[in-house]
Amino acid sequence: MAKIKKLFNTPKKATITIVCMLVILSAMGAGTVYVASTIAESSSIGAENARNFAFADAGVDPVDARIIKTEFDFEQGQFVYEVKFIVGSIEYEYLIKASNGSVLKKEMEIVSDGANTTIEASITHEEAKEIALDDAGVTISEVTFTKEKLDYEDGILVYEIEFYLGNTEYEYEINANTGAVYSKSKETHAVNNAQTTTGSEKPDNNNYLSDLAQISSDEAKNKALTDAGVSSTDVTYTKTKLDYEDGITVYEIEFYTSTHEYEYEINANTGAVYKKSVEVLKNNTGNNNDNGNTNGDYIGIDKAKSIALSHAGFSASEVDFSKAKLDKDDGFVIYEIEFYKNGVEYEYEINAITGDILKYDWD
Image 1 (cartoon, helix red, strand yellow):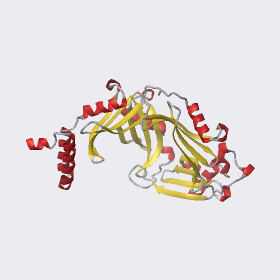
Image 2: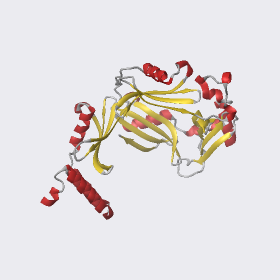
Image 3: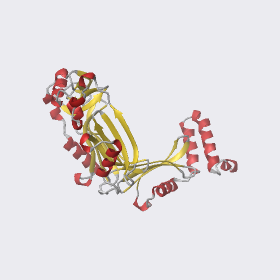
Image 4: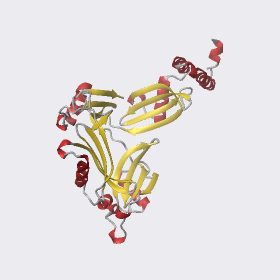
């Protein structure tokens, strides 16, 4: 026993010993690997110390933290503790080296915890936008903004600013405390010859994609419905978006009937079907026959929310919803419902016809 203990009496020896044991024992089955992991954990800094190392690095008071996860694991060739917690409206994720408590990786993300906590930034969204525009050498009247978000990047609070000038997309991350440009990129999207314009004929940059489109979104929907051979009264739309695809401006159209899922890309210049896919849906009762089910049989988003809240034991006023949408999973039409309460995220999948809870989780 004394000889075995010597193999673990320093962090370096412990790491080398455990790695060797895993290599030798991996061929002997999961049970022996589990034993090796148990030995490694017993000689590690421990879960409580791992959390304290994470708290110290984050500069937070442990009393203010809501612990979500502390898990011993093996990653990147070494044993680690995965530590995840929320303070205010910031979610922290750490990988702490199990042998000595050093920080191997950390991430921070702004989340809603139901407390309406405001993130302190030294500059405003508008100031961040101006900084990005000045760096790009353009004015606000020339561009179309597609994203403005306050978030963390590698532990730094930044504004994520994205915008279009013509067919060129700009992406900026502006340090929310110093105003410095943290990162930036620029990409020019190809445009097919039929859509290219020059000189005074160039469309208004504020609506560049819309100006390239020769048909409306409603016309694109009708093209898709006609090709699918279905009526607008029989479908539920889940996506209608104007976008680029291989240098062509297209409408992405997605919808359901009671029996099929359809995904279309309609050429926004010619109205032709550029791409399409059709998938047969199970009718949520165990076979592929219609059995009279129509979209009118779907319980609806509000009912799905109510079912999830009732199961979790909350009222709508107590939570912050982050997702509520109709989707498909393994051929079944479902409602995906996600919400936060007191820093805990709840996720539900609700059968769109029967209202049964197919899956739920919280983290």
